[in-house]
Structure formats: C-alpha cells, structure tokens
Image (tube, rainbow, N blue to C red; front, side, top):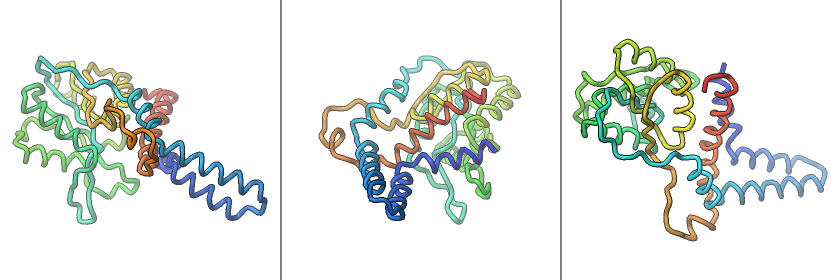
Length: 251
C-alpha cells in the first residue's frame, strides 16, 4: 500500500499537473471572479516553479557537500538503484542519474571498495520489468569488474526496502562496517536517514549533483526555465518522502 501511495504522490507533486487542473477548472467555472483568481494562481505557480534562483538555492541547501577523498579501503559499497530502466523489449538503458554507476565503478577500480552490493528491483506499479539490479550487474561486468565481487539485491521497490533487504545480505556475508552508501545527492538525505534507522554504520558518498555552486549567470538566476517544473517534482518527492518515512518510523 505504501508503495502504491508513493506512486500516486509523485503525480500529485508535479507542478505542471497543478497548472493543468487549475486551467481546466478556470474553463469550467461560471464565476468570472473565480476564473481570474485561478489564472493568477497559474501565473504564480509558473513564476515560482520556473525560477532558477529559487530552485538552485533550495537544492544547494538540501544536497550534502561533496565527499572528501577516501584514504582507506572499505569492504562494501552499497549502490542504490534509480539510474536505469528498460524499453519495451526489456533492453536496459542508463538514465540521467548514471553518475551513480560511474562513481561506484571508480571507487572499485581505485581500490576504495572491495565489493559492490547493487540494490534495486523494479519501481513499476505493474512489476512486469526485469529488476534494475540485473542490468547494472551486467554493466559492471562489462566495465571490467569481476562478477565475484558483485552482490545483487533485486526485490526492493523503494528506498526503505533497499535498506531492509540489503541489511539481510550484509549480515549474511558478515561484512565489516563502515560501508559506503552511494546515491544521488538529492536522494542522499532520505537514504541516509533510512539506512541509519536500519542500523547501518556507513559513510555517505553523494554523487550525481543536480546543481553546484557556480559563477553568476542570468540564465541560471533570472530567466524562467520550464524544465524546472518537472525537476521540482523530484525534489518535492524527496522532501515529502523523508517526512513520510519519519512519521511512519522508517527513517
């Protein structure tokens, strides 16, 4: 039930959906005063959620600082899924968060981590896709990483299940903590809270930064960016998701 509700919540948190609903309402209402208010609300939503400065400021405050250079070796790196998907022929493809894969491979090749646990089933409501972890495992092997050091957890559908199912694997191989937790910087606050609640001793390794401190630019500060309307949905999902996990005792 929690999984299904989370999918519904993602739809509700998309600002573009708010605009569509308010626009349709403004067309159907017979009251001119209400119509004007609805259209003002649409304008406000557009101005707020397409503003680069506001988005950048909140994201910089939300994202953890980049990790310091790691000067020791860790037994296990835990990579959270959410960077790949499948087409209609079940061929795997990397998505926008593929920096998670790159950084994990770099950590292994540099000798920082000895083993990789890939945790990620399918986030589809119909559950008719192959687990994401299977594609990532094959991609690591193609990247020159031995199959013997890759451990796959393919049942989890969300961050909470990532933590629960991975804990069983960690305990079974008797890996020595601390571990390295690898996920997107935007996703790290929620992930870290869940894994900390589950009893993990870990070092956070955020990557795939959505924004980073940069020099002043009109394009990144003032000029409205429609693409941000959808990016806000992912940010709001993290904020609301973390609050929901804490309220239900999962984080």
